[in-house]
Image 1 (tube, rainbow, N blue to C red):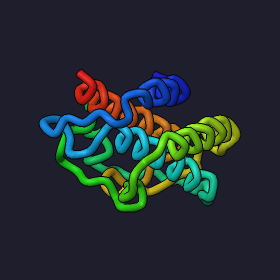
Image 2 (cartoon, helix red, strand yellow):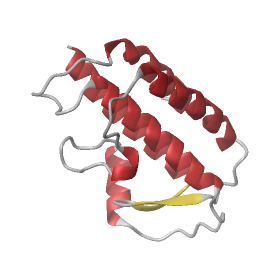
Image 3 (cartoon, rainbow, N blue to C red):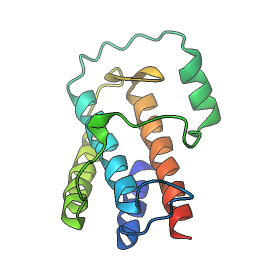
Image 4 (spheres, rainbow, N blue to C red):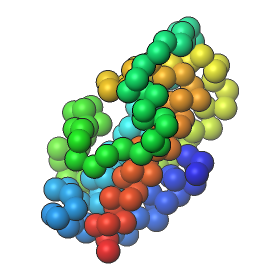
Length: 149
C-alpha cells in the first residue's frame, strides 16, 4: 500500500485516539498515530539532508526485514526522538499529518541514493526507506485496529 494511502488510514483512526486496550498495547491509539507520523516525518527529513552517497552493503537484519515485510510486536522499543511523553492532541496529529503529506510529495524529487541509517536494519536508500515507512506504518495500523476491536 502506498504511503499516501497509509497516511489517510492514520487520519481516519484519529476518531479513536483515546481508545486503549492494555492487553494489546500499553499506549493508546493517539500514541501509535503520533509515533507513526513522527517516524515518517523524521525519516523523510533525514533523507532530505542526505549526502546521496548510498553504497550497498550486505546486512542480514535488513535482508530479513524486507523479506518478512513485517515487524514482530513487542520486540523493539521506539527511539525517544519518535516518542511522545506528553498528552497528544488532535491538533498535534493534524499538524503532523499536514507535514507528512507535504514531505511525501518531496520524496518524488529526491535522488535514489539519498539514505538514512536505521538503528536496527542499517543504511537504507530512498526506495528501501519508503518501503520501511510503509511496513512500519502498516505495523502500527494493525496494532490500532486490534486496540479498537
